[in-house]
Amino acid sequence: MDRELLKQARLRLDGAQRILVSSHVRPDGDAVCSVLALGLALQDKGKHVQMVLADGVPAGFEHLAGVELIVRQAAAPVDLVVSVDAADPNRMGGSLSNFPQPDINIDHHVTNTRFGVINLIDPASVAACAMLAELFPELGLAFTPATVDALLTGILTDTIGLPTLNDILSELVKPGRDPRQQFETFRFAEGVEAIDDLKAGMTLPGVLAIVSGFRETHDTPTVLMDAIRLIEELVEKKADIVYAPRHPADVQATWADISKAERLLGWRPQSTFRAGAEAMVRWYQAHRVWAMRVTTS
Image (cartoon, rainbow, N blue to C red; front, side, top):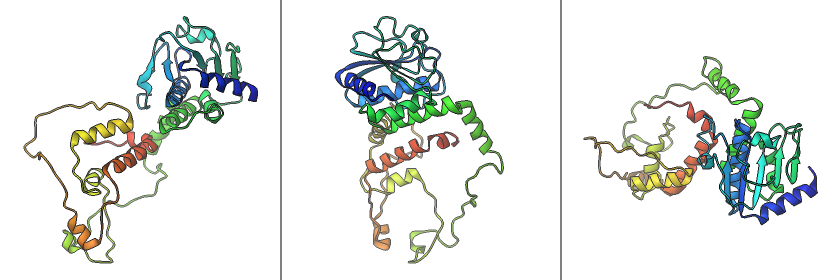
């Protein structure tokens, strides 16, 4: 990539405050995700960003953080227009009809007509998202879990494709296809039914329970709504809360007594509730595809 063009592109991005990022009509994963990744990265730098797709976001990308910020029509005024993953201005639909020539044109198609003021074109790249992954450091943009998630999704859908990815997952659930190590069905150790049954040096099987883990890895009560608001903050999405009649077995408050664990095992909480929630969200974001296959009842 031409170093002088990269320098010019960075100067323009740094100097603009209101930026429009758009892509082609009938958007595929690369179009959706390149708009989203670049838009979120610019927002993280304090820019006011409009992410626009004339035909909206197709189904299958609802899990991406920030995708709800993509709109169908831009609103003036803007200081800078960026086109991604579009080879021709006619492919932009009406998203740029009321705006001047794109200031920056980022694309990987060999047929690109160089319709921007600054054209960052790399036909050797497999996807616009792959280009952005290399361009972010050059443009002074930072990687975050949300931008990485978008970039990887765009690369996957533009190379192996989302249907192919789903085919892979469906194959893995068939007997003998899952490459993960086999595991035995869990059984509690015989004779261990209470804390008093534990003795120093014992090695026992266990079960990881995330819900009780929250309660028992810290010793400060947490109000349920406070926990929900924290999760909303960490995933950057609002919870869809459905209020139902109280069940007779519901309790107003629960607070685990961990003093016996400290007395007998020398164990004390090491994490705050927030730290535990942050770790859980990081784990989920890193294993999102696997987690989506898990069914609950």
